[in-house]
Image (cartoon, rainbow, N blue to C red; front, side, top):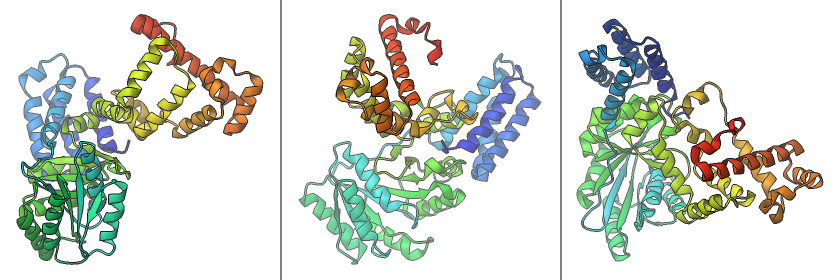
Amino acid sequence: MALFESLSDRMNHIFSKLRNKGKLTELEIKQAMREIRVALLEADVNYNVVKDFTAKVSEKALGEDILKSLTPAQQIVKIVNEELCALMGSAHQKLAVSDKQPTIYMMCGLQGAGKTTMCGKLATYLKKQNKKVLLVAGDIYRPAAIQQLHVVAKKANTECFDMGQVDPVKIAKAGVEYALKNGYDTMIIDTAGRLHIDENLMQELINVKNAVKPTEILLVVDSMTGQDAVTVADTFNKKLDITGVIMTKLDGDTRGGAALSIKAVTGKPIKFNGTGEKMEDLEPFHPERMASRILGMGDVLTLIEKAEAAISQEEAVKLQKKLKENSFDLEDHLQQLDSMKKMGNLQDMMSMIPGFSGKLKQGAQIDEKQIERTKAIIQSMTPKERRNPEIIKASQKKRISKGSGTSIQEVNQLLKQFEMTKDMMARMQKGGLKGLRGLKGLF
């Protein structure tokens, strides 16, 4: 996963040297703090933020309890983890909801940050919470901005309100009236951006803010721009008093400087992060989970949430029943592969498992195309063969391999792995983890 990858590598290298030393001297801890300072600066974290962060960590790490501890390296990792969480905001900050409808979210930011697309992503996220969302086109300057918001609204399966290229304040006020008349409880205003910050842009945003009094003002910034994103956030906050930040392209940010600096510089939380191009690719920003990823400790909670979103409760109950009855077949296996694809990039998913990110960095690659080849093999079988793979003989394997564009060896490998998986599931049903003895070859 690209997210914080280079910073995570540096941090893990620093801590691995500490772990190999057992008890630590004050000099060794100070050297580690210097290395952490350099790692954060190279990750494009704001200088003052780095200075304050390392001072806090050093003060705690050089305490008597740490120096006398039998596991000082673990204690220092714990301190760094806690301070990283505090740096990014300690806990996820939920969106505010207005007592009086509609709840209004005003989106702002510079051109190119992904603000208009983010309107659709936020609408998709809110619709999953049973909100009725209206998008309002308030960017009257950028060519095709209104048309783009209509396209985004269609993808998000919601409505877009526009009045053409008239005064944005009039559009915002009319949008509120339209939302009230048509039963929309939530409204997202897409405002104009600029290639750079100027007084005209800010005054227009202030006018819109004063006219409709939004519940939240959310600034959209491109995480790939590093300290430029922090400067933009600081300026917008001073002028508009934003309530939160949404970071786009965080999935491609290997350094993480902006994510680690914004809260400390502006005092305002990062509320969401964009993780891809699809309308569903928006995640609530959890500082404690991000800190865990930076330190190579995985992110199990996000992984579970992705699984819950990809697999319905009904499907989960059905699967559990099949596993209990040992009637899991290749039809079910195909459905599970489809669910895995819904969860996103497989390499990303594996990096969220504690301890697995290190193996990925050591060169263990996950072949995404293998899932498609496996699906092709199963789809080339008849329904009867999928339900009863044991009836598949040599002539049928030849037909399946030809139909799926794979080799007979790959068909044999799939059937063997499926039987081993079934055997593992059956043993686990009978004897829990003890039932896994004898299946070492599978892992």
